[in-house]
Image (cartoon, rainbow, N blue to C red; front, side, top):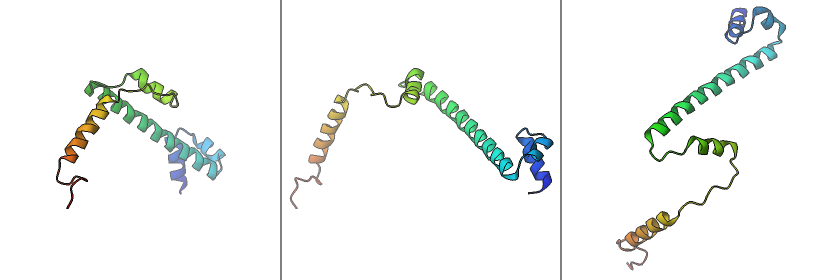
Length: 109
């Protein structure tokens, strides 16, 4: 890395030339890496914001904001039991469909 590149990277993250010179090279590299990670984190947050905006605007069955935040802040809480009847009905329908097909396990070849 050249001095130009060193000062350029320092300026990009808000360091003055004297601050760059006060750091050891390993310290400077750590600061630059940390800054790049923080930019990545901010980008991910922006993408998540866009996703959730579309999710709430386009999905009539969307979870409420409170439910989503609670899922992040209290991930170990036991979720309310959901109605499993639709799943049972769907399983029975698929079983009947499968048993009626020519590839059923009950078919003897």
